[in-house]
Length: 171
Image (cartoon, rainbow, N blue to C red):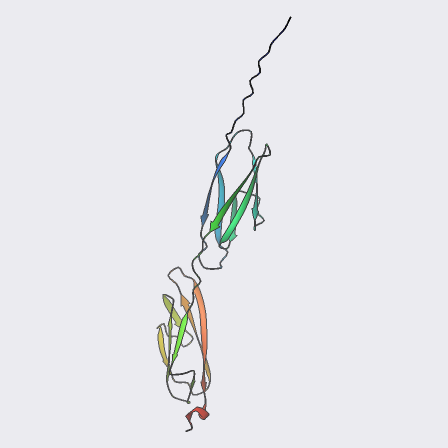
């Protein structure tokens, strides 16, 4: 006598899928960005998920208050399946001011020199001027600073010291 039993084993190649996203940093180097990963398709055998972000210490699907850069999230499903996703958090380019001094940073006392700056949308000088170019007539060695602001509201400061020297005037 014989007995035959047929067993059908069904395996699934289906896996959970995830979407990623980010909100860029408002200024270069500012830690106000957000990155996230969300399950788009999650199999019942895989939920809930645990998340481990690097280089962040978050263990949720979202990291906040991070700077621009590449972040990796390791996702572990309840059934042990593991997934890895990366999120490239964007940030604006670094704001750089280009300052020019004409004729020189060393001048005779009470003579004029022109300070010009470019690279931002608006400027605020230590003299109170909001122009991109100022003419100064220092009688003593003086430091001038300018803060540039981008259209995004990012700021950067630059300064220059104008040296007054009677030695320069001799001759």
